[in-house]
Amino acid sequence: MKMAITAIERDGISFRSNVIILDVFEKVDDIVEACKEAAREYLTTKDGVQDYARNNESFNWGDFIMDVPNSICEKYGFRKEENDNPDIIVELDEQIAEPCFLVTNIEWDTDGESVDNLPNDYYIPFTEMMKDGETFDNIDIEEMKDRIADYLSDEIGWCVKSFTIN
Image (cartoon, rainbow, N blue to C red):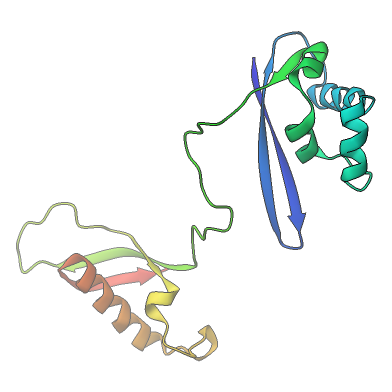
């Protein structure tokens, strides 16, 4: 049975993680405890003692991933799997989303043409709509509606009759 343990490192409001892929081939009641037992056994070896000293008398999940050999892990019913060819790799610091206006109930002005696949809803990043120095406290809502209508028309190619901002 395959299991994954995600090890998270927190630094204030940010964090990073490592995933440990384990192939559990014997009945193991508590896989986390089994990993800790394997780590304790590793720390009784010459290499383990040296690693512990080199790590300022610390041994964490990252050390477990890097240092505890499968020859020890297998005694506890599992082995660590190499994941040298992951399906997807992403950068931890990559920004994947930003605040948006959700524009719904969009009524398009198609000059009477029948047009398929025009969106009813659309996300517009705040950064696309806000001018330098502008904040939500000093926004003119009517001007923002005009900007959104212009943006939608530029993006989709049709004018907008009406919409709702959520």
